[in-house]
Image (cartoon, rainbow, N blue to C red; front, side, top):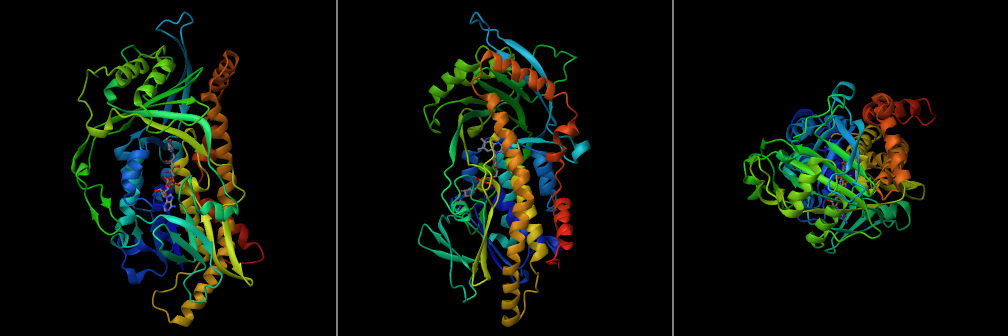
Length: 526
Ligand SMILES: Cc1cc2nc3c(=O)[nH]c(=O)nc-3n(C[C@H](O)[C@H](O)[C@H](O)COP(=O)(O)OP(=O)(O)OC[C@H]3O[C@@H](n4cnc5c(N)ncnc54)[C@H](O)[C@@H]3O)c2cc1C
């Protein structure tokens, strides 16, 4: 079977790796497979000429939840270990609310709301990790490029059209993919991992889905972690965390350490679709520790990402200057007034200074995540969505990467169960009948995948959107209710709050589906 994954973001790279693991058994014998030993052809195509650069520029920091790390662990490539090593383990965050002084003075009022559980190792096997989005992408892309020396990972391949091919009798696949440069490819299965602005999504659902501005924008940047040091002694009755989330009447401010120093001399690479080579920037052998800050606020229209930085700084200052948190005040003075950080070295190059502006675009909850193409009752191909293409997660869900990794693992496990793994060398008659069987199997794989993942992710999406409302402009009464609600919420037991999400286990969930199906009438198990 020929599978083409569109989009080499974290979701696409993970899918490529999972399909290689479960379908082609690439890592069973060695970390690099030889082309002739792969029974199924798997291609990973990316629009950007250099996906690492894209991610570096659009990506800020993120929290990778225990369920995401556990899903990536299934690859057996040491990916979660690498992420933990470079990021900062953060099982808790401290939540506060902050109100400006009524007389307009500098010192506002702070209310301690509690400690938010982000997922700890003891309960979930992995702890939540705060890290750079670009670093996670770098790690999965690097692994993808190791498979067959990057032969099947191609960048600069912008897809402009995906359609059913009515006569795939030449064995080339029933889905036609058109590229911006006029090129055409065919596949049996296309995986749309092409993000929020997905092209594949419209064909899957049968109408255009326009991402819309959620009304919230995140601004943020990198900092030297020394700026987060508190000079006031912590209240021993209030458990604290270096990750602090502050809710205000007109937005949100968060800060956390997100990178430990590490040696990257053998690490990142640049891909031009053919070769892998180190970039000048990445040749820097030691990376400094890093912290990040971000602020979310409500606005009627999305601000331009590359708008004047002075305007953004003035807005941040107006919203948070009166905060009762000395760290927020110091961050504001540093980013808005250029105040030097006293301790520690200044961070180098892109790490500090530039503000990121990230308006949140979301899509409605989709009716389906897959489509099977048939002609005269015979399956000719299929389309399936995952990651942000299927469910654009608001950043506050903390589940974007984790959900994409779980989607990828679930899809690959289900495909591997239904689809054959023939030896590479079979005669053409046998191979075409195996292929026909594999195509028919898509009729079971794709609904099973959507049926398993979509209800779970829909629940995460719905809750995240509700939580996002607490970052909008609120009346004093709404603020009081929010504080009370959060205070009560953070007192609830961790398992009650988080087991359904952080405890989601890909292998067990897939097994449950397959067991249910075995007791059904079609008996498709291998
Ligand atoms: C500000 C911000 C904060 C976030 N915070 C968190 C967080 O705290 N925790 C968390 O887990 N997640 C967070 N996320 C989300 C997370 O980064 C994504 O959910 C995750 O990376 C999954 O993305 P993806 O691979 O599905 O899509 P993307 O990362 O968008 O990748 C899609 C890829 O497809 C390519 N592509 C698009 N169109 C085409 C085309 N036509 N042809 C070929 N290629 C194409 C793109 O170039 C891109 O490389 C955040 C996101 C943002 C923007």
